[in-house]
Image (cartoon, helix red, strand yellow):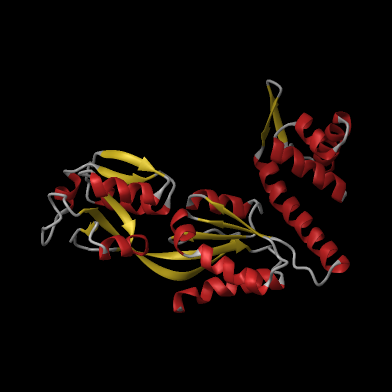
Length: 293
């Protein structure tokens, strides 16, 4: 088994196609197929199932990719450090949508001022997608909402947040002093998409109280939901950090519900096998310190 085998396997995994992987690597298709066969024979495992001319990764293949991607990443880190030690390697950062709106832009800008030669690429997705990408080493660092428990991940809470029920200033419930969950659920709910941390927390609350809400809107965009409840008789659940200005300006109202807020943490995650470069360590530290600012 060689690095060449690992690079070929990684390309096939990412493309889920021998043809596409061979084109990506500029290799003949028989050479790519042979490399996969040699890996399977060397470890006495099956990496891919071949069904109707399509490839499907096996459970062993998923585990193999986790190791292969980290080995390749570490080798590339070493190559870069030996050949150009003064140039920091790039960093791939994944963030949930709320954190991406609220915290990432200014923190990455401050990091780039310190490391102008280090390119930071940012991917904004929901928390479940970010966790999976970090596990597969597709991302160096992830920022997600709420706690993460996984034996392959380091998970460090770095900021506290609260979620509130919100509505527009003209909503029938806007002037009430205290509300029950049943009264709130009598109106349509405008919520984030399934898989987002905020949605999971909200669904957990509703399920615990055996509530049966009418979910009228689902969106990956926090701003779309805020604007929607501003002009429609719906209710949403939103981070206090995202609605501070709208509340101050009187466009959005926080509904008085007990408990009036759902506590959660923003969590920084990276793979336990990840080699932490100086630049990546600095970016991690900047996020850890961001709650103090």
